[in-house]
Length: 203
Length: 349
View 1 (tube, each protein chain N blue to C red):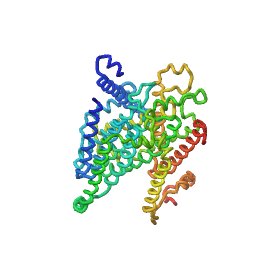
View 2: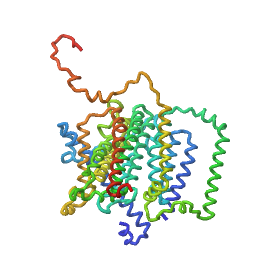
View 3: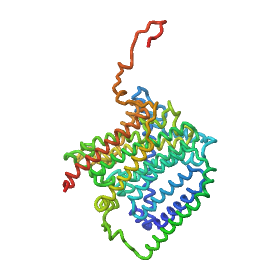
View 4: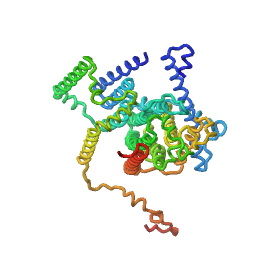
């Protein structure tokens, strides 16, 4: 009973906040609705018994990705009129993506409702007694270790690429030399002098 | 507790719901009381270190000072700046406050005394603490004012930076305990060298304990890392435009977070509800008292640091997080997992 109520609560909120993400006029509000959608999707995953994925979703997407989104959107000065003008140009492309997604969902649900395929069970059987983390870790670090490492390398390359593209040496930037600052002692910086009255200080 | 309500004639689900709500109240209300008292303790410690008396007028020894302050802000007028984004301006402090209380759900107070004994407990705490940044960022943006906005940007950069190293520190502890469940983590700390309880006595984890303490200060924006509300640069930071109860919610949330971080320190590295020495008579003292004693000790350390250490510069803060803590904690993940591979899990076959 509580499960059903919770499911409908989370599902309704995901759908509504997803819709509001694209409908709201203010981009900051859009990001906030997106965060609510992420959060409720995590709730749905907890109901499915995938608590590890749910926590990762919150940590990675809500805790890191969406914060950066919000960061960028808050600081950007977005011209809404210009955005709206591009809407018609992008319409066919958007429709195409929407169609592909719809086809995939229909295909997926159709196959699933035709009968349990259990491809994953056949390819990599999991002991149902194990907890989420142990099951995922057991597969990821044995059977799929090369794919997993390859994904890691792709991410590393992407990160280095982003740094290379944006990093340029600019002149006139004054950096802090921490080692030099730490070496500095009070006797190098402070001088006690007995200054006679009525005379200027010699620096 | 569910069984108790079931005996009263409720169906299982109703009993479960009722007992959860009672459990939440049993945790949240004492936490609020603890926050009020800990604010008083903070001010007293701070005052003592500055050779002042601190609050000493309201009630005996000034014990009721926090309640008087609470009443004062409660009776104040809530001012909302005319250029502010009204809804978000009001939601932001509520987020901070709620998130600060939510994380307590998985904290074990004693063997089996925990609201939600889930096997991803530590990940839950990480997830919840990563939500805390929204309260600050939204406050900065919704205030539509310069200094709060600067502060919000500082806060989000600071919190994300230190969450990374906290994540790696937690990985070390999780590797050692072999579980994400907080109760299991506490139980796994029994009997170092046959007589000590606590991961902190482990030479491989002791540096992590120190780093976690420092990262916890940065994560909760306590001095010396309180750059989000550096008054010489940013007036009062993200809460500049806040008044009355909205301001009080930030205040309470901040201290609830500090107590939570102290509790996490105790649970992850110093044996949580276990007595520090593995000696049978000490187990007659209820575990919750040991936990409280450890929380209070770490809170004293927090206040001590606040009273004595000058504020960091922002570039120093970022350097400490990214260039020192991140590589060091990564190295320790490597060391701990290597050590465990060769000892507990039987070497590299």
